Length: 326
Image (cartoon, rainbow, N blue to C red; front, side, top):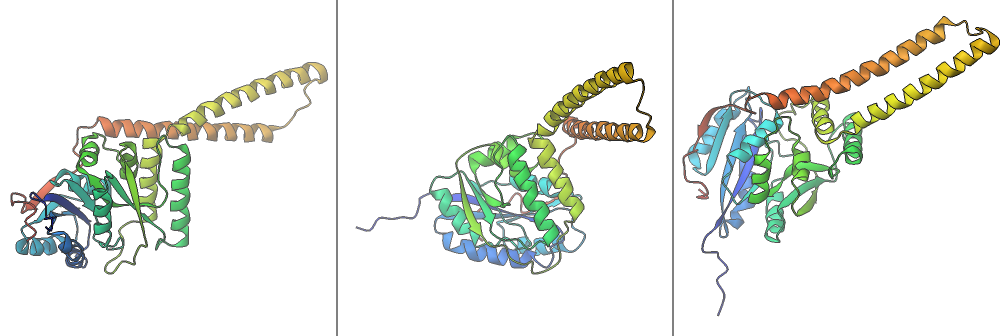
């Protein structure tokens, strides 16, 4: 007798799609996501959550068109651009599923990863991370990104995975753990590692963007790097302490040596330029140290503010029954 493999109660999987100025990609992205989830309808229910992070084009209109045709598409429209981390948090906050998958609307991370993520989840892993084996960045951005994650892996107090993308799957337990973290100075890749849980990886090649262009510039990458450095490492402060101790020790030895020279040989050192260079050098170190402390204070200030990480201006299909696969 053939065993019935169709579960009596289907689990719900939430697929989150962050969007910012992606009017040309919204419909295409959903078409590819639907294509890669249709074969799973006999085992799972799906809801598709689109978060529009304050787009200035017709991204909202494209999401509304899809939501009108498909009641399991949920649209969340933020009042302005609150940054990619807040957009990701909004997706997770509105996810109802037993698992949550994130796929950006730029289609550089292919939706055909979804069945692979689910297969690993079925094997018992709580977190599945997509790791790319290539990038479409220019040479400078590629080198900066690669060396930043190598540095962060060395100095951070958690295991940061090299070439780990933002796409992946979170089991409901892992999802609730990330959602429960109250911090506002968020670095998602770090938080995903910090919560623990069994983790698996899917390796893939990134694709070229089809429509539009990336809104990220070099300054945005540096701001993103700050969140990782100051949110997951205290080594910079430790270096400041050790550097200060070494400089004080060297200064003390210099003073002792100088006094000995004066008493024995008189005052042979008649040089204002070396003195000026020493002042500039030590002044620069002090300014750098104060700036680093200021960055940590900035993180503290951000965490003590009572402002929400994002504000929702409008929603669509939020009260509709999730996971009807229609």
